[in-house]
Amino acid sequence: MKTPLIVASAVAAAIVMVQAGTAAASDNEKCYGISAAGKNDCQTATNACAGTSAKDNQPDAWIYVPKGTCEKIAGGSLQPKT
Image 1 (cartoon, rainbow, N blue to C red):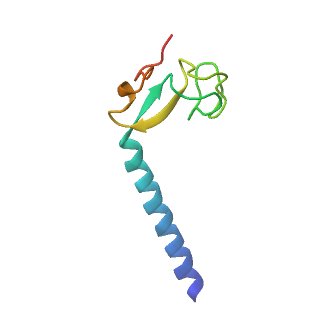
Image 2 (image 1 turned 30 degrees about the horizontal axis):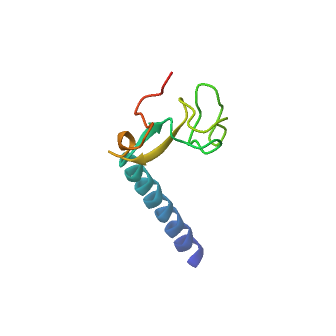
């Protein structure tokens, strides 16, 4: 009889974690042009997925940073560079 309770607790914990992750993502912004090679957070125009940028400070590669900090970082941009 404890199994349903354990499963229900696990599902509830997973839902809370997803909601917390969504809230955390809203506190961040994409910052282009500052990631190290292979450290980008998601795909770019020239790379298929996260962790595949070819060079440091690739203009179209981005990482998440706390809101309000991107433009304070040398080379950081809220839009992809061309």
